[in-house]
Image (cartoon, rainbow, N blue to C red; front, side):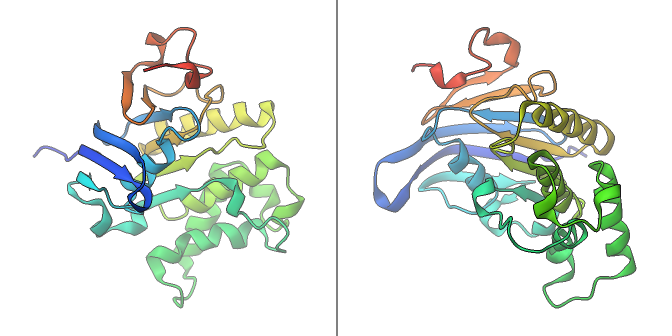
Length: 241
């Protein structure tokens, strides 16, 4: 039996509020278990493309499918791990690493569902996977920027996702932490077989780990191994179409 691809976009176009078209005629297929970087300049449409993939936006034209189902009606949303841009993270809240990671089990158990023994085990496992076992009971706001990002990735992992989507995960994170994040994602990809979509305008953190680069500038202008874009890989915003 042939396994359905993780992501399929067919002739997808999108515009916010009926305004200027952000994406036009996008065709994209991402296989189960791939580690893919979505690159492009600010305003190029890469975050919009990610939101379409996750069913958070609906295309003006075309079709978006997740594991063979329409993305906006995907029936197993608890298997999607999503790390949005850091702007929405309330760093001043007195929440511990364990508490923020436990929130990642909500899609599976429901808002009012109790935290079961199996959920606690998944939380502990996710925290250990990102190397924060010794900081479990520390408040998130006391951690470094890189450690905070790892905690947020653990939150996404607590739901045992089939697909992990990260939007600008290295914003505000120092170079050493970016490198550690890239190594962490590579290990998670290899060990868990999770499909990873990594959105950013620069990719030093995952340069040696991603299998495929999809360059978005209103449309897909490149799709292939990052080695085929010499001189553009570190700053793909310089690509002209």
